[in-house]
Length: 260
Length: 242
Ligand SMILES: Nc1ncnc2c1ncn2[C@@H]1O[C@H](COP(=O)(O)OP(=O)(O)O)[C@@H](O)[C@H]1O
Ligand SMILES: [Mg+2]
Image (tube, rainbow over all chains, first blue to last red; front, side, top):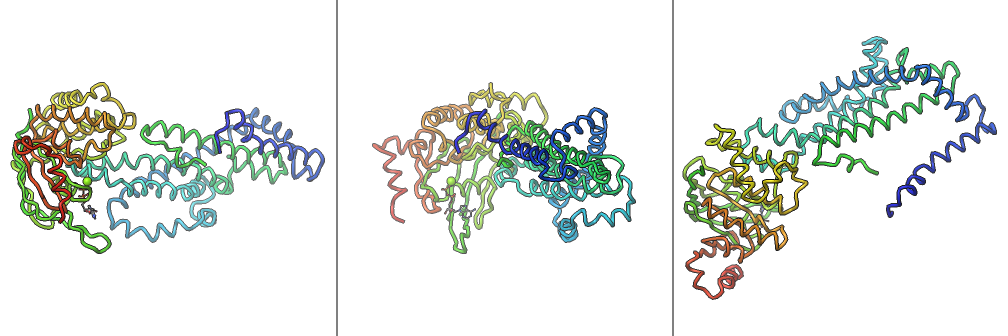
């Protein structure tokens, strides 16, 4: 498709969301659906405004962010050395491959009952869910980055007589760095999506809690606000990280592989 | 402070690759000597084994038979690849710095190394772009930076694999001129691979003609300077039936 000028592109991109909101409005205005199940967009917007004004939504969001930050830090702390060790030492790879493959195939949600038994219903089990959800995307991107150093750089390193440390510093790490950043970006988005599962565990705050609690209270408008918050913040977070990370690797366009 | 240019002696050097189970003899019993401070061009059709021979000398490939002897021992060549091969995550200047890490004679003085880097970049006309990223350079500038990286190593020993073949004609001609001036000032032992006969004749004192993995011709400047058309003579060797 030829690239349309900006206003045209914007109109097309906005068409589906606008139509959906209009349909939504019609559906609730003409009561195609029971108003309890589908509050009007206006009501949802008003609820959102209230929740923001009262500080409740920012507070839930803040709690959720902190949870993700905590869980994700653990993921990074584990994935960084592990991917390096597995890359550098074939023995470690052999040793850990089977258990890691197994863990990768277990959906974090399936582990929740066990996590609750082991870690209780406090922060620890929520963190564990987030770690489980984000570990593999981060770990696998890192490992992929380390394992896929272009032969031409290895050849250059040999021709310059680099030793191991120099190879790691000048070739291996910088070459894997873009994959590392992509891994972080992917991992954060996995965390974000796992949040709901984590906050299903007896949380008293967080966006996931807001959604579940509102459902129990019959406040479907708040459920909507919670879901929109997750979706919109997820997009914003993802874009923000991508822009930030792209600035860190001037020699490579990280967006290139993610455009669609 | 240029290191003494080494002498390179190849004896019965052979290398066979396997392609889908079939042996391909890339280099076939090559014996030759590159004199101290000489500029030798290696010409031949694509696939005749030039790159393999160069890689054997550089130690990037190990021979099946024969030996590569570099005197003084411990000297190793500065390479210029067909592509610029600058590390994309380092600026031009830092690429050159990284190349100096194992030039032990220079390890003592940082100021000396920086001076060499600046000098090499000036020599190829890139002094103003030393803070640039490789992706910001044009093809010709990047290839110049690759050349500067080899020069700053002042190893007295350079191997170049068709360094200008990917460039446009005007840039190529300019770099050929610069190459000649550079060699005249550094007098490194140089092996310059090319498939361009006129480039070989313009730059070198000696032309080796490679064919099917063997050295099929070995000409010195004083031999070809008397010829009416050295190009045709060399072409004749390249195209003669096996
Ligand atoms: N790594 C390799 N594996 C298999 N065959 C190779 C390899 N490198 C070179 N060859 C083969 O060896 C022959 C000589 O190649 P090369 O030295 O690159 O020639 P030139 O540089 O003169 O074009 C060619 O037939 C090529 O296909
Ligand atoms: Mg070649």
